[in-house]
Length: 293
Image 1: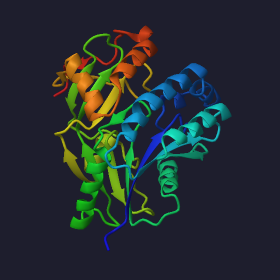
Image 2 (image 1 turned 180 degrees about the horizontal axis):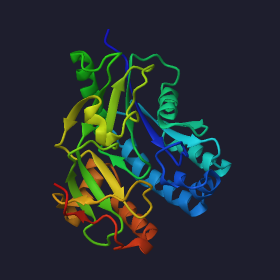
Image 3 (image 1 turned 60 degrees about the vertical axis):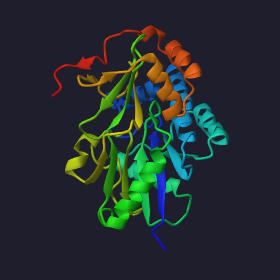
Image 4 (image 1 turned 90 degrees about the vertical axis):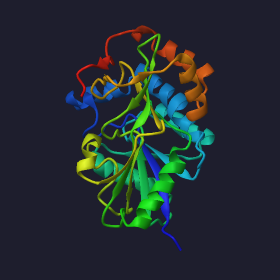
């Protein structure tokens, strides 16, 4: 009998942990107030409900779990809204934790995704609420994880990472030519997973994703588009630049990819996001990076 491998994703949904948010440079109480501000939470739910979750619902392999990691200080109305999403997305779980370090919190979130079942391995992926993965992401990740386990690349003692380096950048600040075909030269957190033992100290949150290849065995694929990364004025991370070698996509090609590759509804999604970011249109930010080698 082969090894039991569970595919589990973790999304830190407005989780105020001890790292990972620029807000934490503020006073903790001020950061919490800003984190749960009504307009911010409406925006995060709009991303989660219209980009992230639909792309996961469209997966060709549905044997996976997504855990939304939230803080124990999240207001009840937001928790209730998350819980209601489980009816539409039965793969969704919620882990409510106190503010703590990213590794400890993510380990507990991945355990929540096991649903009390035994597993020899967890193939744990990370995703943000405003990002999406291709319809065959889980299917391909599971197949590759199985090969890495069979080869002895991923063992109970030694984890291995699976990284897809090609995807779409969606610059929501642009009213025209918003989509770009990008091939990353280093792993992103998005569309990356780690195969590890459930009791291991290691998971995909263990290291900065840009340093992953120096810390773990990595299987890398730069070919098929496997992710959508959204860029807007409300990203919490450092402002991202579109690589200089990115290829701009036509509107028609972008719409076809949203629909066929990512399982999204462009007729509904594009006007919704345009309305959400109407005040951000053509603002400076995710410009092309002409200095990138």
